[in-house]
Image 1 (cartoon, rainbow, N blue to C red):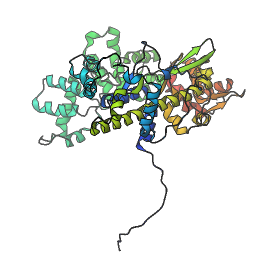
Image 2: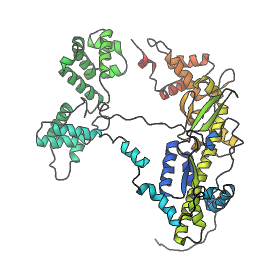
Image 3: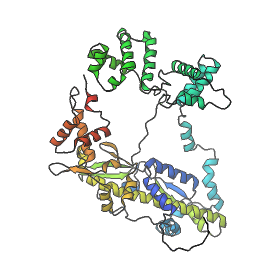
Image 4: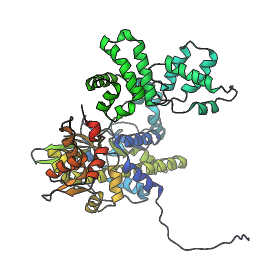
Amino acid sequence: MRFDASQQMRLGQHMKLAPRMIQSMEILQMAAHELEERIEQELESNVTLEVMEPDIEGERTTAENAQVGGVAEGRVEDRPLEAGEAADDFERLDSYEQSNPEALENEYSASDSTPSRDDYFERATRTRDSGEPDAKSEAMANTAARGASLIEQLLDQWRMAEVEESLRRLGSQIISFIEDDGYLRTDLATIIDRMPAGMERPTTGAMSLALRAVQLLLEPAGVAARDVREALLLQIDSMAAHKWALSPQERERWPLIRRIVADYLEDLSQNRLPKLAEKLGVGVSDVKDAIEQMRRLSMAPARELVTESAGVIFPDAIVEFDEEEDRYIAYLAESRIGNLRLNQEYAKMARDRGVPKPTREFLKRNISNAAWLIDAVEQRRRTLLRVISVVVDAQRDYFDYGAAHLRPLPMTQVADQLGIHVATVSRAVADKYLQTPRGVVPLRGFFSGGTQTESGEDVSWNAVKAALKEIIDVEDKRSPLSDETLAEKLKERGIEIARRTVAKYRDQLNVPSARLRKLF
């Protein structure tokens, strides 16, 4: 076999996305809070970028006042962002100076003396160095500290446990493998193999003894269980040990509950209550009473130690009903972002040949970055407004009557209507939320395919799911409807879909099958 090295020339064309085009797409896809963080980072690192706050508290910005629903089309500029557009930042600066001749002197026009160039840089750091309170520092200081993790809390408990030192080391190793929900899903053999270097490998018996000590001594009961059955049994045994905290009826039920969990958990999970009662030799009412008492048990034993805070959703736009025009309008909810602009003091310095060249080059780079970011944010606003305008117009019935009246709205239809690529629509709606009279809803939820009713009316798949949920909510739980019957009920409403489609939508709604929904 022979290997040769050679040189060849080839002529070809390749398409590559400029880095700033990629960043523009990323900004379009950002949620409101992510965009705010991105702007905050740029404001901290770029002295030429600043935020123009509204003159009146609570006043909407220009972009926010661009109402959507038809009246905004004349205000929203339909212009794509060109690659390299930020390179023309000084041309835009010229036009800005022509349209705002007073902007350059707005702060020092009443002053008798002209500040030096060094004064500009001094102003940029004056607040930071003056010792005056800083809003960001105060906000960080007032933010609650991160809570201790589950492992940290369990190790703190374990340090207080009265056990032998050898058992304490093994228990600490076991605790390090407990997962966030409190379960120990790593087998003991693997834990032994991963013992720290220099630590003697214990026997399986010693590790089992340490696991039992962890399970019995740590709170809440059920921590370090290896499956659901073991977690429930640990909690049952713990409650039975504290009989003083139970009523006489509860104390009588615990033996029955333990039998159900230990031997018949499968029958319980499949809701086979009559069969379960027959095996236990008790009545169905006794089994139902036991199940009711079992609600005190937890499938995730560590949940009370680590509570996950729900994520805060910041709506990107607000939809309101205009009674005078009898239509819905929308505006961007960007008051927390504000209007970005170039700092004209630094812009003058960048064009002043009396300023040292390194300083001018530094300012030019920052002005270029700031101008590009301003363009990208404005392009995001324009695109988002245009997409929302189509949604508001197309989904009027949803805003009037609810989710069951959603219309099919494919992204390709919106892209064709606006003359943009479908990928742009997809990025524009990603992780965006609308604040509507019917609550805060994801913008992507308005886009879906659909079907036609027998009367020829178009309904979206989300509307079909809403109708399915309505039918299940009002069914008789003693005799729940099968998937085939649910399909028939939907057909009565003019929506004809297959039984397997009903089952698929039921699963997506997290609704169990008819057998599991049955109440005895």
